[in-house]
Each structure stands twice: as C-alpha cells, then as structure tokens.
Image 1 (cartoon, rainbow, N blue to C red):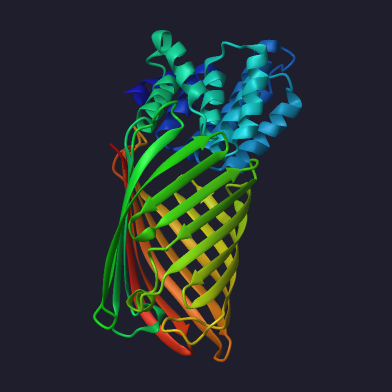
Image 2 (image 1 turned 90 degrees about the horizontal axis):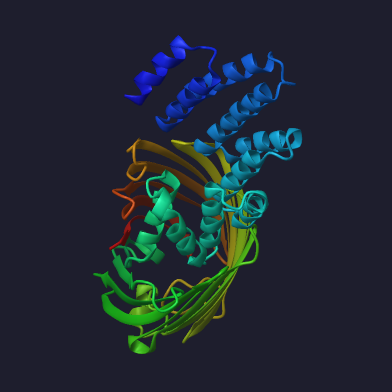
Length: 462
C-alpha cells in the first residue's frame, strides 16, 4: 500500500525531494536497492543543479546524499557507505546527521568503539537525540555491558514505545534476558585413516537467564561421543559452569564428571585486536583410538586475531596438547578476505598455514612427528529467501571448496581437498539452525583417506 501511494505521489510531484526521498526508503525496505540507487542518483543530479547557496537546497542535497550512503550500508556494502560518509563529513564537518550515520555504519561493521565515539559527539551537541542514545547504548552492549541499554529503553519506552529503534532495542533485551541454548552434532567416517570406522559426537549447552547484576549466567553442558565398528567406543560427560561477562571480557569456568575442567577467557583489546586463552583438563573429544586406549588429554590454547573490518581479518593460534602418552604442539595462521559482498550473496577466500609436532609418532592414534599443511578455501554464500517485512527469517546456502598440500615427515607431500555444502536457516529471531555435509580427502601416514562429514547445530532463546 505504501509503495503504491508513494509511487503515485512521486509521479504527481516529481520536483518534491521529500516524496522522492520517502520513495527511496520504501524501495530500500523492499530490498530493491539497484532501483533505489538509481532514483537517489537522479535526485542528487537534479539537486546539484540548484542554488546550493540556498540553505534549504543545500540541506536537501546533503540529506539525499546521506540517504544514498546509507543504501550502501543497508545492502551490507559498508566500505562503500563509509567512503560516501567520509566525503560528506569533509564537506559538512558539523553535520550531526552524518556523524550519527557514521556511528550506525561503524556498529554494523562490528566496530563498537568507533561507533561510541561518533554517537558521543552527537550527544554532546544534542543529548536527547533518540537514535544516538540508542546507538550508544547498543554499542556498549556489543562490548558486553547491557546496563546503559536497559536504562535508555526504560527512559524512552513511555513516550516512544512504537518507534522502530526503541522496539528493536527492547526486543534485543528480551532475547538477552531469556534462556540461551546451543546444540551440535557431528558425524564422520574413516577419519584419521581408520578405514570402515564411524564416529559421532553430540553436545548441548544451556545457559540460564542473567543472574545477579546481569553479568553472570550459569550453564549446564552434556556431551556424548561414540565410534565403531572398527574402534568401538562410547562415553558421555556432564558438566556445569559459570559465565561472567563485562565490558570487553567474557570468561567461563566449567567442571564435570571424569575430572573434566575448563577455563576460557576472551578479551577484545580494540575494534581490531582480540585475544583468547583456553585451558582444558581431561579433554572430552579425542581420537577414538585414544579413547579406546584410555589415553587422557589436557590442552592449552592461545589465540590472537586482527580484524581490519568485515572484509579482512587474520588470526593465529598455538595449542599445546598433553596426551598421557604423547606431547603435541600445533600452530596455525588463517587469513580471510571478502571478495564480493551484497545483501543476498557473498564470495570469500581464505588461506591457512598450520603445523604440528608430536613427541611420539608411534602411538595408537594418528600422530605425525612433524606435519605442515598449506591450503586455500573459496566460499560462496547466497540467500534464497528472507521475510522482507520482519528481516527475522531467512534461508542461506553455503558452498565451499578447499585445496592444499600436506607435508608429513617420512611420507612426503600429498594433496588434500574438502568440498562441502550447508544451509543457515533462521526460523525466527529466537531460533536458528545450521547444517552442512562435506567430502574430504586427506593423507594419513602416506595413505589417502576419503570420507564424509556431517554437522548440524542450533541456537535458540527460550
């Protein structure tokens, strides 16, 4: 209905920039971005020919250019949006609208500190500006602090309960305050070169609602692992723990049956840098041959990641694993690059280098004395469907292919590859399912093994 009315209004009043601007926003809501871009470009060209010394004309010209910049953001082309906003800031450095939009794009790019900075500039001039108040509060929550968002929603709800941004913020808090559950299952055949063997791994982890001051959650975790018929194993583990989240820090402590224990913490050092540390005692998921032999495992994992923006990141890690009959060390470096990005499709590439060293290559499970792997992956994702009105339900398809070389000491260099397909299904904003299936060819002690793997997982708020 709004589309029909506005289209007619634009046809009847072609010189009205207000009606054309409203029409552009409707097209964006309908995800008709190419059409919206063309209409905005035509309007900018018309306004550029007017007297821009006239304050009203200059304001209209800036507003349409700002809308054009945000169109790039709506279709997830954030780098293009930032470029257009930077140009506007250079031309109109005092524009609070442009500064606010810059904060919104920074938040979408997962740069909450930069977003905070922009929103604080706006609020320094206009402290009651609603979108900047909510933008600042959401940015703080992105860093792990929900207090300001709770306060802001409580203050705005009485007078602005039906405003979209207020409703969205209230919904975010509703979900955050619910129980949170994660589940996953993995299936594999012939992994680690054990011909004819099959393995299954299951896990479910349920978090309580926020406790106390809102920084704590309790959780329960159950895992199950089995294999057969070549290596016959079956075991399960139940554990409980606490999660603590404050600004830029998330920490979990967990203890369970069989002497299991885990400490894990992640720290966001800046909008670009993050680091992690995980320590596990009596690691549950192990190679089936190690499980059958009664081998116990402890592990320390260190990670460091640098993220330029949504288009490029590079991360590395070091893992020290103490088997009761072997010492293993692993190191890796991974770089990810978006090659193409739009609201309904993405193409990305990644490169990975990893190495492993074991103190004893003669144990009963795959344990190369030294191994180096170099591989590259190309991933294509395409959205088949989305509920355009709510933006809460969608179906994405994912295709990938990995190719590389593995150099294992004593066995030379052999090729590896992995080809897979998966789906990401958002049923509502409360529940999401992911699944995938892949075929892998990988050399173990000089013998190429080909096997299938399957994964399915879900996350939901209840």
